[in-house]
Image (cartoon, rainbow, N blue to C red; front, side):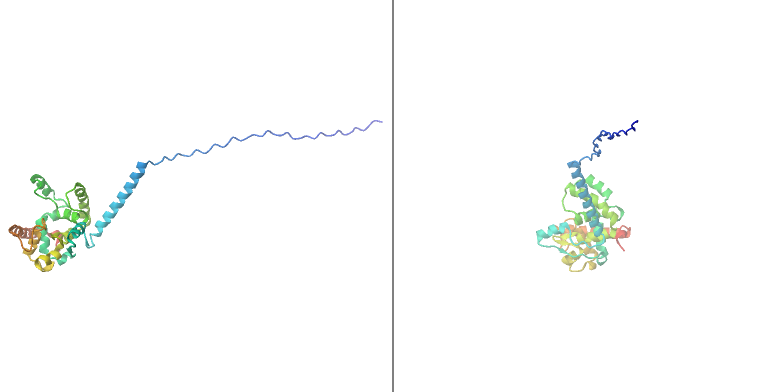
Amino acid sequence: MAKAPTKSKATKRTPSKAKKTTKPAAMPKATAEVPQESFFARQRRRFFKVLLAVVALSVAWILAYSVVPVFTTPYMIAEGRKTGGVDYQWVALEDVAPVLARSVVAAEDANFCEHWGFDLVAIKAAINEGAGRGASTISQQVVKNTFLWHGHSWPRKALEALVTPVVELTWSKRRIVEVYLNIAEFDEGVFGAEAAAYRYFGVGPEDLTALQAAQLAAVLPSPKLRDAGNPSAFVRRRAAQIMDGAATIRADGRSDCFED
């Protein structure tokens, strides 16, 4: 009897192990190299930031004084330390005799209404005549006396040349004269028309006569050496010239820019 075929045992297949493939290590992402700022570049950047801040503050100072009374100046502070104090009281231009404004302009800068801060004709004449003649305009004197220091150093002159056009652009001519009459030195420690009028003549600045105004204008170049209340022969002659000059600039319109 034939044997029934026996089932052959199925051989169990074991899956073959696939070879492990190792991924290549990820390359680090390339980063753009930021160049290191050099020491000198940092210092230059800081310098320009400081310079910009100084310029901004200076312009703000100039603009403020186009409307705000000048309460003091660097020169007043320096003189106050030497003399123990100064005589100074701000007064509006409408409270000053108009003849005083005309007198100081005639004496110091007859072409004040016609220039933009620098009198090129006067500068040329000063160069031709040498150191004996000055060419500083009222605008330049206001800048020097209000914002800077006295002296003949080149840094001061350079700053004066830079600031004067800014003042001319942002202040009216009337305002420049008003500030000038208030901060000009008329005697040692005596600043401004109000203090000078009372010191020399015992009157308020609104009551000054043409002669008194001319005598005050005559002392401006050398206030510590000249006396408006007890004028020398030179001051009297100079005052007579100034009276004529004040009348002339009124007649020909060269005082229109600062008068009502």
